[in-house]
Length: 88
Image (cartoon, rainbow, N blue to C red):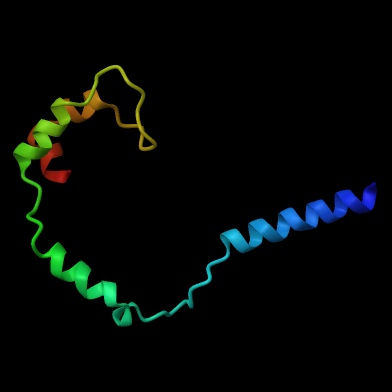
């Protein structure tokens, strides 16, 4: 029984070690990745987000909800005015 529990524990440890260990080389050259040129090509076509788009997105946030991981509530973002819009 103890041997079986030990094997299960070792199997779980091995699984999570493999799951959370990066399989990429630390200095992998992503410029050789054929997708890199596509990302550059299409990201150049995407315009910057305008202040009016950010303002509209903030208006759609519901009040009274809990803050995110940063501790900032929707009400605080909405009350921040233009300085907050420019940072976002």
